[in-house]
Length: 167
Image (cartoon, rainbow, N blue to C red):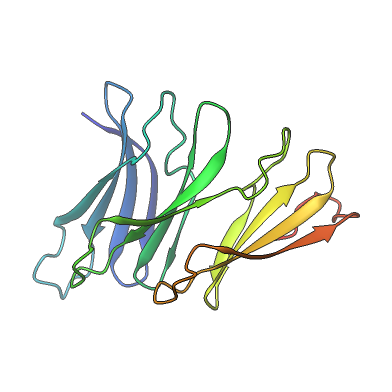
């Protein structure tokens, strides 16, 4: 029996639930919540952590962008990274993790992934350099590009805003 601790509705009619079973394994469940759909209220996808560790922080933060679901993950060394899943039901890669985006600098004490956003074909990730200076990493987020998921640039903000985050 799963215990659900996160839920949200994605506008095209997908309900996101994060469940942790009795063994501590985290899974993400996507349900069709479009009343005009033939599969209304059906489970359309179950996603398991592609890099399972215990304890896991898989899927604690997420965002939907077009036909993609971006989920955070963290390993036992507190390194945060992101998995990009294809959630287009007509796609040959539906349900698959199509890209793993990792921290480009892995500095001890950094805060990679503290905040993130996908917009206009870019994946923006907040970070610090370990000394409290703010960083913004910009990744290509256009799946048709050969550079999808690669770092485009990093912006350094030596005097970050009061809360320390840029996005």
